[in-house]
Length: 145
Image 1 (cartoon, rainbow, N blue to C red):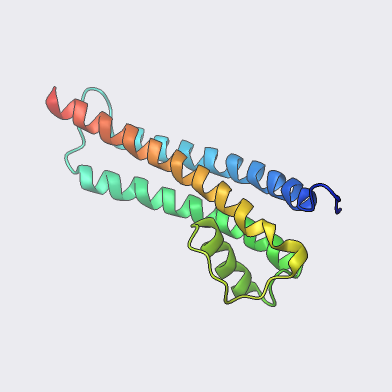
Image 2 (image 1 turned 180 degrees about the vertical axis):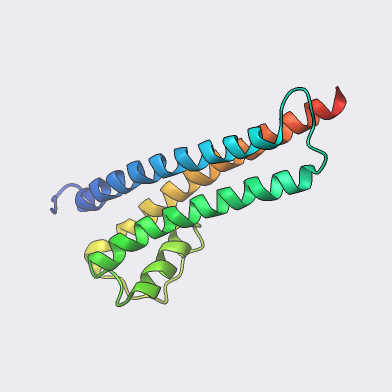
């Protein structure tokens, strides 16, 4: 699906679908983080080991991001973007995290996907950061009361 005016249109549409899937994935990850938080915390009692609480929240966030990396890696593998599964996962990791790596040869007609995955990763990391900030704020407010 090439366009004279916007040659990345097909890649943009594919990225839009994958971003939609990762938004749903992230929503459920954040919902799990919230459930985990509520499991350890109520308004009437404070969890005594806040570090364990935070480690669990961060573990849920990392797992959520890892699933999202794998969602993109599946696409790369299925379209033959990379020669094998491990390189698909690696390429997705370095794109999602905006690290970038030019050691993997990418077909010219797919080069826009890495940047679009990076946009997706930035958005998901921002969402995770907001969740961590909200939880930290909740812990700090309850610490003072």
